[in-house]
Every structure is written in C-alpha cells, then in structure tokens.
Length: 298
Image (tube, rainbow, N blue to C red; front, side):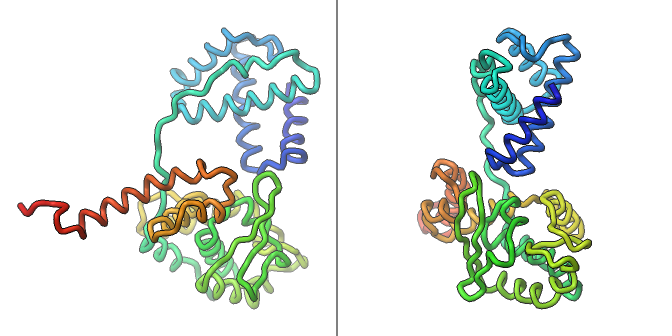
C-alpha cells in the first residue's frame, strides 16, 4: 500500500502540480485510512460500500471530525482510488459511491485593518530577517497570494517599474498580480539590504531563510505564528487569513466581485462568492449607522 501511496504522491506533485501543503494533507489522510484498515483487518483493494459506511461512522462518531474534514478525507481517498483504478490495481473506485456530507457554513476569517497594522509593526526593519518577515506580511495582504505562490516568486518575476509580479497558481496557470506603495517600499528595502545579506548562495528566489535557501510554506506559517504571539491580538493567523483579509477589504471598499475573482486567481466566481457574506454584513452595519430611518430612537 505504501508503495502505491508514494507513487500517488509523485503523481500529484509532478503531473497534477498540487502544492506541497495539499499533497501533505492528502498523504496524512490516506495514512490515517491505512491505519483504520489495519485495525479492522480490511484489505484496501477489497473494500465494499458497506465498509465505507462504517469508516464514515468512525470519522464522525469516534474521531469527532467535522463534516468539512470528512469531505476532505473522502476527496483524498477518492483521488487515490481513482489513481489505483487508472493503473489497473483495482477494477472500480468504490469511493465514487460516497456523497459529500452537508458542510457547516463558515464565513472566512479575516483581520480588521487596525489589526493588520499591529502585525506590520512587529518585524524589526533593522535586521535582514525582520525586513523579510515584514515583506511576507505586506505581500500576502497586498496581493492575496496563496502561500505556495508566494514562496515560489523569483527575482526575475518582479517588475519593479510597473509594480507587478508574475506568479504561477493552481494548475500551473500564470497570472500577474499588482501591489501598492507600502509593499513596494518594503520590497525595495529588502532587495537592497536584507536580501543581500541572506542570499549567500546566489538563489533565484525572493524569500530566503537564515541559511540562504528558498523558504518553505511551513517556514512562512512558522514566521506568522511567531509574529502574532508578540501582538495583543487574540486570533489565529495563516497565509489564507491574510488572503481572506485582502478579498474582504476590497469588497468592503466597493470593488466588484469579478475583479476580486481575477485578483485571487479563482477559476470560477463561485469560489469568490463566499466573501460576499462578509461584505453584506459590512453593508448592513453601514446602513444601520448612517440611514436616518433605519432605527427608531429609544
């Protein structure tokens, strides 16, 4: 089983161009499934639909997984069994019979602008790592990039004159993102100072770690966790929360949904529509604060 899993991981990486984070999540979900099979004395290529019903009960009742977490695991296993069917290891994919569970509706988490300012103040701009960390914050918020897109930016991808960056997104698709004055100022500082100190190995990539090599997605998450612990903010942080903040603030300031879709690199506008819930909450708040007949005086 492990041999097929390793081949599946290579398939996701080299043929499907999935991000390292997604591949790692798929691998962990499938390994958990393998442990369940071992516990129940089940054979992976003899699984029946009735076995899957008990597996779903195990995830829901014993593991206490959320519906969205269960759906993700089923999706990973559906992909794995599709791969096994395509290479002739199994005759059919039983996971195609499993329908998705009803998802709990969750609004995207995001930072208010004053909270972002507190985050921006943490990195020490007198140090090379501080300049890099501030640029990570500024660029994630200024562009709405995914973390996988961020860590793969090369110096040659940046057009300083036009303040644009060429990035490679999901499905190996290229797009250009733009950035503003604040990000540009920190980018120039880092390129002319901190980057020169960190780039001991003549790397091509923009974001480097202390050893002078390309930073990893995990490294970015570690940096963000370290930054927020210094603040007074009682929130969790991730690259995606900064991406959510970018999209939410654009909509709240009147940007149209189609433009936000293009800026985020979403293939379908349906993926962008989740942000309209947040925006409508903002519009409702503005309405009640400003419309003279919205509320009666007590």
